[in-house]
Image (cartoon, rainbow, N blue to C red; front, side, top):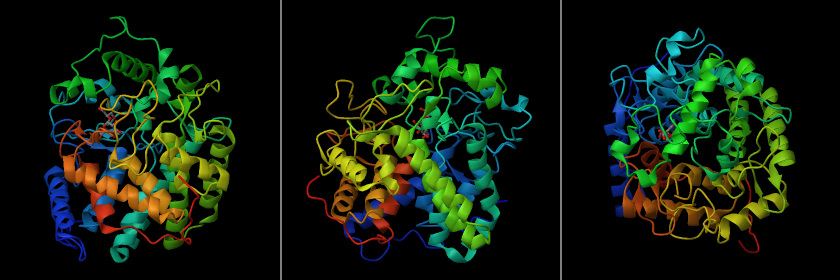
Length: 463
Ligand code: 9WN
């Protein structure tokens, strides 16, 4: 499926017009991607902390490669889809056979994908991550439309199968795709999952006994990672799902964690919009994709918008809402929304909770909440991918000034603290691993500047 590397079509030199400081940042970002590139045609998120291929990371990373080497961007996505299961799911992790089996926990011996008939030859995990891939594929195509068209023809059926799996096996009565594990959200220990997670029974060893060696703690300060209790629950959830051979029809009726998440569904709708554009290029029908995008967006607005809080919230199986004011509640700004909702999201983003306009990117969780923790993973720190998604949304709505503020915040955080995994949203300091691939990749996209807004700039009275 993959084509030859073709590295350097655009060269590593920065685009014309960047300041000397931005040009230096550009070269440094390319250096991170080069160091993290694997000969098999994909990029590790981080050499030591995440030494395999991750699903939504590859989508963000492809967006960055598209600015430097569209050939590598195409390979990044195609190598991921080479590990797609026959039921259409795109696994959260594709394990690198050349990496020690215990280099990451939980590794291939825990997931046991070889026992699953639908799984591919390469070993993988059995869960998914947010479906941002069709959107990434579209961005990759736009960067290099010549060879990009053949790439779209190759990958379109796999992208459709990915979405079909979610709509066929993972959709609830509201028409929303559900996740069965916090790792599927990509925002692993977000306070949004606390309520649902609290009722997950943990293993026999006791509430904070993790059945395995947490390799993450060999590389990163434990105060910046999920707790052992979180991990005990993560493991218990995988065991419950794995017991059913990862078959949703069997597992979901009794599964202890079934959540409809605004960020996951926003990316599904956004990617359906992208599939509509891709369909036009490959000679398929765009309308079914547009219809699905609208259906998911409408379900999101109808069931997940909390008018009092002015943001979108996750819902558990019995309709219990997760904590409001996670960054996932702002990300729907990527979609067309009714004006009052858009205005509320902007008020939240620009107010004290998310402080858009500060020198750092948007926090992952409300800065004013008692549960906010400025350095612990998804419970406060600013991550570049979620701010990049909001930035794309601001540009879509023609909000140039707000987009410029967020762009500057992203660039200055990285310039100040390096290509860190996440940043303290108040102090701006870097945390988690260094040389993190999607931070470098999305910095390239931001530095290169994005598509011109489709609409006339829209000014809000105040944000
Ligand atoms: C579990 C790879 C991944 C990201 C996730 C991020 C983190 C893994 C972990 O790293 O999760 O998937 O071990 O903590 O939360 O979004 O895809 O970068």
